[in-house]
Each structure stands twice: as structure tokens, then as C-alpha cells.
Length: 54
Image: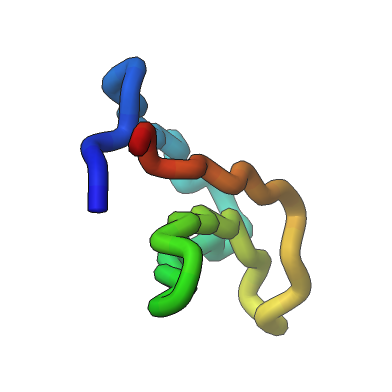
């Protein structure tokens, strides 16, 4: 598997009243990495999928 280029940094905040959390999933076959920002109920507010360079 290759590296993810360019470098990505995911930042969320500040926490004001509502709770949000991040979740990361990696596809074992493709190597794709998907980052989710979820609200307190688990609903996805935003996502980004990164594909590794080959």
C-alpha cells in the first residue's frame, strides 16, 4: 500500500453546546481511508475519502 499524498489533517472544534466526534474507516481491499464527522446521534455531518498513492 502507498502513502496518502498530500498530507491531510482533520480538525473540528470548538465544542460549543453540541457534541461531535470523528470516525475513521479503512477499506482492507482498496486501502481507501474515509474520515467522518458525526453528531451526537451518530449521523454523518461530513466525510472525506482518501485513496493511497500506488
